[in-house]
Structures are given as structure tokens and as C-alpha cells.
Length: 373
Image (tube, rainbow, N blue to C red; front, side):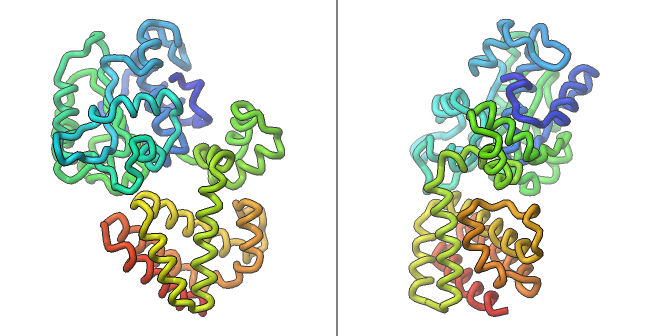
């Protein structure tokens, strides 16, 4: 993948290229931002750029043997580490799922953890980077570069490392071998060990502008400008959300219906209905639960902002706007702070494997109280 293939992020590209040109590329980079902003795509483009035999001023050449191998994801010195579902019967590393990973990367460079879990058929489990993976990383990087140049280790979602794996990786980051580059693509860098973050150079990858997403939708999906702009406005700068807005309407409707159901049942104080809602949420996979809760926090924000009467600050689909028109008055300055805290607390409980029904029913009860403020 070349820099030209990465959607937007011109400032980040400029920083990365300047470091290579000035021979000041650090041994470890932390690209911090949502996967939909292009962190993984940028990592792949940088790997191609430094491995290219004849890279141009602004990009890899795209046709030398090194470029061909990186583009086909078969370069022997480009390695990947990513969250997996640990198998009890044997040692589990990224290599266990490498065929599925390369197939996914070959299909699209923009995907999230839920997409990945669907690829490997484990949506109802929480993925981690286990102990065995850290040893696997060290083993790979201890070998000499096959091509005699750079060795690159791209770690996708390093915040999914368990404590032991993170500590093992830390030792490698403290004493890197020459011409070895770690690229950590993290959505939540605050969950990484401070000692790991301190040994990387952090580059924040910001949301894409509405105009960039609009242009990309027109060029890559053939949308007319009005349709593309309508989609781009509700994505929050996230290319992946733009694609899902186009293709995954059933999922979008399910999230909105889930939010509306919670608020309506809570307003009516329908405890039996809220119990059924809680059981329905608890039946989802952990990653899907977190995704739903993130969406609900987004909707709380949109409803609160709606009350100020500045439509340019709202980013909603027509269906979301229809619900917000009548509901927004219930989300106000008296309860928005506590609403946000309660949903964030539920999200932490889900991540911590707290019993699902309890987590969601407690959230439902708090919603009853807060709607009356």
C-alpha cells in the first residue's frame, strides 16, 4: 500500500516522510486514533515507503521487487501482531490466524475489531494479544532481515495485550535491534502501559474532514456530491463508519432501535420490558456490547446538542434526527454529565467481564432516574 492509497491524513503522511528523509525515524511509532481514521493504512504505507528500493519524494515507487512484495503482503521482513481468540488446546499467536488476517488485509485496509472477529467467526468472545504472542514477536525480530534492510513489526490494537505480554514487549522496545521498526496502531493508547508509551514516538491520527470523506465516497463509491456529503456529515471523520452507513443499514437500524427502546421503556418505567432489554443486550458479544454503548453515548451527545438549535453541530442520519426531534428535551444540562458517566461506567464493566444482565439492568434503572431530572 502506498501513501497515495491512504484516505486523507496529509499532515501525518508529511511527518512520516520527513522522518525517513532526515534519517530520524524512531525505532517505535505509536499511531493513535480510530481504525477508521486510517492508522493501519498509514502503517502499511510507511512500511512500503522505507522498504522501497527507489522511493520517490512523496511515496514508494510501487513497482520495485520490494514494493511488489509489500503490496502483496508477502514481504518476509514485514510482520503483524493482532488480537486473537486464545485456543485452549495449543499455543495461540497471530500466526494461528495469519491466513485469515492476510485475506482481510488483501480485501480492505479499513476494518475494526468487530469486523475482524466476524472474519474468524468469534463475535461472542473478547480478543486479546496473549503471552505466547510476545515471545513470537521477539523470535521473529531476532532473525536477520531476509532482504538485508528494515524489519517492520506492525502491532494492531496493542492495548489488547495482557499484562505479561506487554511487559515482555517492553523489554524488546528498550533494546531494539538496528533497522527494526515497531508501528503500534492503537485506538485507546491510554490503556497501554505508560512505560511502553514512553518508548514510542506518538503521532495522533485525527478524524478525517467531512470534505475528504465526501471526495473519497465520490471517487471510490461513485456517489453524487449531495449523497456523499449527507453520508460524510454523520461519520464523525471515520471512513469505516461511512462505508457501514452505505452497506450496513441493518446494523445501524438495530443500534438506533436499541437506544430508542431503552429510552422509551425507561420513560414508561416498564421494569419487565427493561429486563428483557437487558437480557437482549447481554446476549450480544462483548465487543458488540461495547460498540452499542459507544453508539448510545454518541446519541446522548447529539440529543443534548440538538437543544441549542445549531443544526450544523449535529451529525445524525434522518432516522436519528426524527427520534431526536421529540426526545432531545429529556437530555439536558441537569442530566447529561451523569448520563455520560453511567454509560461509560457500563462500558468499563463490559470490558471487565462483569455479568452482563446486571450491568445493563443497572444502566436501565439509572436511565429511569436520569430521564426525570
